[in-house]
Structure formats: C-alpha cells, structure tokens
Image (cartoon, rainbow, N blue to C red; front, side, top):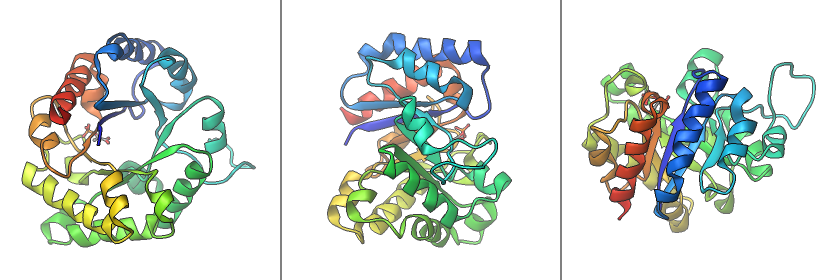
Length: 254
Ligand code: PEP
C-alpha cells in the first residue's frame, strides 16, 4: 500500500501564500516516487487554482469539507458535485473541528461520505477520541462508534474507496503526539473493524495518523505496521516540513 501524506491547511493561507505553497510542493513532485501519494487540502477559494497548479503531477487536491445534499438552498455550502466539477479528487469529512464547532454527527458525516462516493471523490474520514475519553479508557469504544455510526451503511466496494484518518483530538494542534504504540494499537483496532467487512477492506483501506505529526516524529509513526501515512495540519503549512514528511513517507514505504 502506498504511504499517504495529506496536508490540511484549515482556514490558513491567503491566496498568495496558498499558491506559493502549492508551487513549492509541485516543484518537487517529480521526486516523490510511486510509493507515496501526496494530497493537499487548501481552503475552498484556492481549490480551483491548486487543481490547475497540480495538473500533470500525481498530487491530489482535496477539499476540507462538503455538504451532503446534491444541490439546493443551502447558502454558503459547497456540494460534492461542485468539487467534482473543478477536479477535486478527495475531501476530508468528520474532522474533529467540524464535530466540535459545527456539531457534526456520525450520521451526517456518513451522508457526506455517501455524497462524495456518488461523485467519485475519495472521502478522508476522520475519527478519534477526546482527552477525557482517552483518560477514562473509552478511546476504542469511541472510535468504534464513530466508524459504525458513519460508515456502517456502506458496502464493501464503497468502503474500499475511503481513506481513514485516526486523529486523537488531544493531539491535534497541541504539540502532543500519540506514541507509536498508542497509534499502532488504535490503527490495529480500526483495521480489525474494517476486517469485519472483509479481508480486502482491511487490506485496501489506508489508515492515516493525524495529530501534531512533524518531521521529528513521523518516521516512528509511519514505520508502524498499520499506519499508512499521515494527515498533517500545522507542519503542512511550511513547505520544507511538508516536503520532508513526504520524503520520510517515501523511506517508510521503501
Ligand atoms: C489536523 O488538523 O488534521 C491535524 C492533524 O493538525 P496538526 O498536524 O496541526 O495537529
């Protein structure tokens, strides 16, 4: 399986810095090798330009969210069909910031996954426990519930088109990272949940780690048997760090 390095730029960058960041990554694209898949997720206004800039490379441009409806009176929202029409290839859904600040439920996130699959866009489904849930020992149950609640409705071929990102909420943007053991045991748990849908699902669905992943800790994380790469926030905003993470991913999959 290829190691995936996905950058989530959140509500950061302006037009000039987004274009400059994409251009720094594009310049190096020929060096990435076939074992690494690079995905970048700029803010909505910069997606179309990023698609244009990445044309002819293997870099996939992703959105950070979408609306579940096909179209209609949803002022301010963006549909999967719109994303498809500009060449977006993947979309993050269920990020903990969406769950926390916008009250997104697992059922709603499942609807977004369905909308993306219907348009041939790869959903990057995020799950992960809060600090209090980890401290009370509920982390495996929390992730099980999130997976079942959002993804339980999908068929085996549909599941095989999804990327999962395990992002412990306490590690996102905090500088705290899950230890390699904590990451591996949760990824193995997710793999086991996927396995209930068939061996091919657990073999083919990439499971990424996210949460203060950076060039210092990435090698250890990406070396874990069930960690297939990373969803990177802060470090993906610094071209040198993001490119270094891509290089580390290349060595991990070699
Ligand atoms: C994220 O937002 O998905 C994330 C992992 O952020 P950071 O790398 O900054 O913790």
